[in-house]
Amino acid sequence: MGIEDTMEGQYPGIPPEASSSVAEFRRLAAHFRELARPLGYADLNKYWWYHTVDLGNGLITPGCYDYRQNMPAFKFQTDMRGMNVLDVGSATGFFAFEFEKRGANVISTEISSFDDWDRFPGETLDQTLDKFRRDFDNMERGLPAEERRGPLARTFTAGEAYYYALDGPFRFCHTILQSTVRREYSTVYDLSKKKLERGDFDLVFMGDVLLHTLYPLKALAAAAELCSGTMIIAQELPDVSEPQSVMLYIGGDRLSEDNGVWWLPNRTCLEQMLRKLGFRDVSLVGEHSGFMRPFGISYRRQIIHAVR
Image: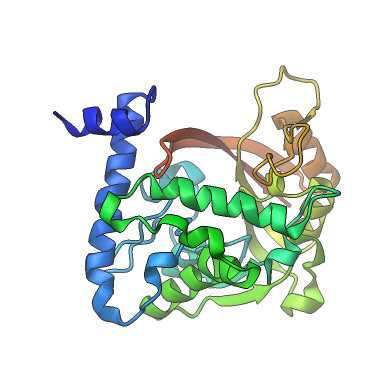
């Protein structure tokens, strides 16, 4: 019996290529834990790794998303020496560390707690946490039985969930990489020149941020205000016929069942908003696709460059 057959039994109905992505996640997770165990981080088994980050010496975080092979699609400058770069909604920090590796001075922003996570009106913090716990439990399915944490995630407090999902993974990578990326805590709506002590970023990057906001235009405007050069947005754009400008609602009709996503602008809508915010040249430069590896769920993201 091959690995695809084994994974097909765990994930009925998914295609073989998705099964392979889950198998790769299992392999990487096991290898990471083996190498990380001697580092003295007793609670690493509780971390949620949003990004796959190569930390050197064979230590690679078992991320939900692995963008390493997708870098050419983003059309980032190879040499970023002297550039000031803002990575909005940085999570584990893959892109922030990538920009630093290319020579940039980088500020990485993230919310300061799950209280700052957008919630649909009427949804409680506990309901928001339940979505995280559900995803955490689903990730367990991608691990060998002996490595599953069982009901552990279901007991996380709001502070623990925030640390294990966002701040802990970033801080771990930051330490191992001996990074100088500066981490700032803010909602995307509250980003400002005063808060970040600068507002002339040569590059502002937003990957999968707007779909997690209830007010995407407000979020986009706050980030755009800080950009003096190029804004790069990487996210799913719905397949809605052009040239109609559409903001598609995808939040469903039940609280706590939306996975924290509500709005998807189509390409025309996003381009029009960016031009109205003062970007003269807005274009689709590429796309990338892959699988959310713990779940075997496919994704495709389009990449927009907006230049002042």
